Amino acid sequence: MSSGASAASAAETTLQQRWPAPSRPRPVVLVGAGGIVNDAHLPAYEAAGVSVVAVFDTDRARADATAQRWNIPRVLGSIAEASSIPDAVYDLATPPDAFLSLLQAI
Image (cartoon, rainbow, N blue to C red; front, side, top):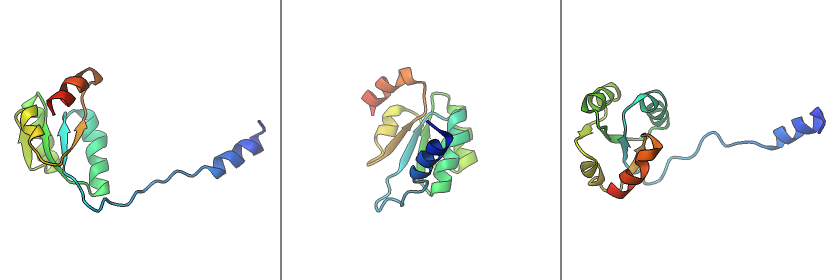
């Protein structure tokens, strides 16, 4: 393929960068409070105006620090407590091998 054809293909493909806010926002509960949450997820939620209502991490001190840094109102003590939040969206920021057991608990 010539460089001209490649440039034309790239010009034809436009990716939507912004999405409309949901008409009925749902609360976000973070499961995991490590680096990816603090460096990527929470800045993105903040930029999008998404409400994060709670955080759970097996390391309570890490969850407390994340909640304090990002003004998250609740630090949860268990995954069972997280699953009791109605209509929540769960952001699983954990190693992939934990997903199945977390999903079963939620």
